Image 1 (cartoon, rainbow, N blue to C red):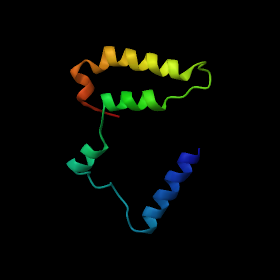
Image 2 (tube, helix red, strand yellow):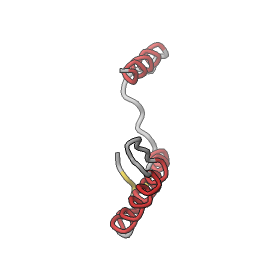
Image 3 (tube, one colour):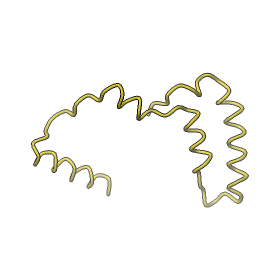
Length: 84
């Protein structure tokens, strides 16, 4: 609900400033800057993941990193940009 109010306020601000219509198409450089590789996403997940129900978060992260490194990062798909 809070996100909707933020988007509504941003839309109203854009209308007030005369910025109405379809947003400009992002440049290739902007798109490349926002992309993240699957390998980087795995690293971020293993570093930042938290779960209050996990008894030993460090052991979970170690196991997740081991499994993801073995089964995902070993493949060439890990170096391609993740889409979202």
